[in-house]
Each structure stands twice: as structure tokens, then as C-alpha cells.
Image (cartoon, rainbow, N blue to C red):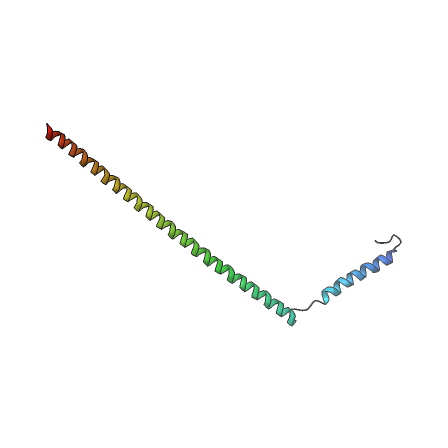
Length: 113
């Protein structure tokens, strides 16, 4: 109430005018069959299809990256296993060489006596 002197009738008329203005605003809205509304709907549909396509492409890319990481992890595991096998073989070869040197020293010491 902007003025304290408003009568009940003035406030009722103001409320009625506001209600009618609100109804008029919604009554002037275009219908669903209106070409402009159909165009807006088609644009929304195109945006939705583009979004769905982008999401699908992102999902495919994410899956490809996951598979690539899994393949890389598998290759890394194989390389690590091969490194362990090579290290074990090298260690065994070193032990054999040390034993042969020890046996040669022992044989030389026996030969001197």
C-alpha cells in the first residue's frame, strides 16, 4: 500500500488490475503450434542431440583411454616380470662363476701340495 488514504475499493481495483495484467501476459504467450515455438523446439532438440553425441564421444574416448592404460599396465607388468627373471638368471650365472673360481682355487691349492 503506497498510500495510507487508499480506500478498500481502490485496493480492490488495483488487485483486480494486477490480476488481469498477469492473465494477459500469459494469454499472449504463443501456442505450441506457432511456427516460432516450433522453431525454438527444433533448436532445443538439435542442442539436445548435439549434447548426447558429445557425451557419447566422451564416453568412447574415456573407454579408449582406460583400455590404453590397462594395456600399458599389462606391458609394464610383463617387463617387470622379465626384468626379475633376467636378474635371477644373472644372479644364478654369477653364483656359478663364483663357484667355478672357488673350485679352481681349491684345485690349484690341492695341486701344490
